[in-house]
Amino acid sequence: MPIDKLLFYLDFPFVRYAIIVGVLVSLCSSLLGVTLVLKRYSYIGDGLSHVAFGALAIAAVLKVTNNMLIILPVTVAVAILLLCTGKNARVKGDAAIAMVSVGALALGYLLMNLFSTSANISGDVCTTLFGSTSILTLKAGEVYLCVVLSVVVLAIFVLFYHKIFAITFDENFAQATGVNTAFFNLLIAVVVAVIIVLAMNLVGALLVSALVVFPALSAMRVFKSFFAVTVAAAIISVVCSLVGILVAILAGTPVGSTIVAADIVAFGSFYLMSLIQSKEA
Image 1 (cartoon, rainbow, N blue to C red):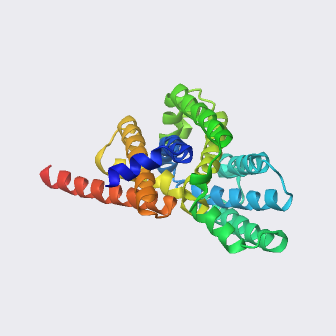
Image 2 (image 1 turned 135 degrees about the vertical axis):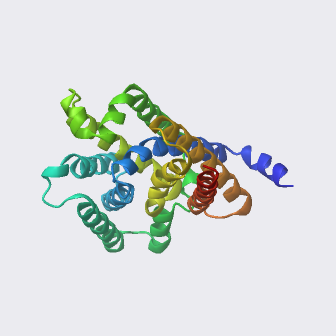
């Protein structure tokens, strides 16, 4: 029976770790995802995840034991450059993200091929890009780090909710009313970078954008206010991650891809709901 099989697997610590991290990362991703989608920065998750992949390759070449010491600062720095330079940048918006994304991915793969001592480079790269097994090999220390960072992200979002709301919809008006838009753009950039780094263990570098974009777009099909969309996106994201992880455990499918498939099904469902609403109106 699937229930018996699931209860059997839940006895293992690594399965419980995966569920805890999956829920926390999905929750954080969905909250900031609404802001990024509305600010037309949906692709930022993909770009930063590729930067994180390049930083991971550098950490591997340097044989750094705790690769977070390199991945997190590099990803945060690039996030600040992409999100905070904005109108003053010579290479703007999607063009800058595309350049950074492709460049970091290519250089990361090149470094792993030139300097890696692993006998299975293709397998290592596949795991990093698609998160096929990394979420099920988390250690207790990594889980604690994820919990701490997730709590910080959630606290920032709750404490500065109104400021984030203001700069999401009209940054110029927010600045005119006295909001320090530069500081809050910097804060959003740092938080987004932290989320991307955490999400890589869950779905892999190539699928991170799905955690950011799909729940927000699904919620926007049905709900209209910023608060309602944010809450709905959080619920959708957490439910899809839980379903994806449990199905992956029972069916033996890749965790990251299964979570994204659940997000796609959710988006399709909410899209149909929006069509039904429009016909009834």
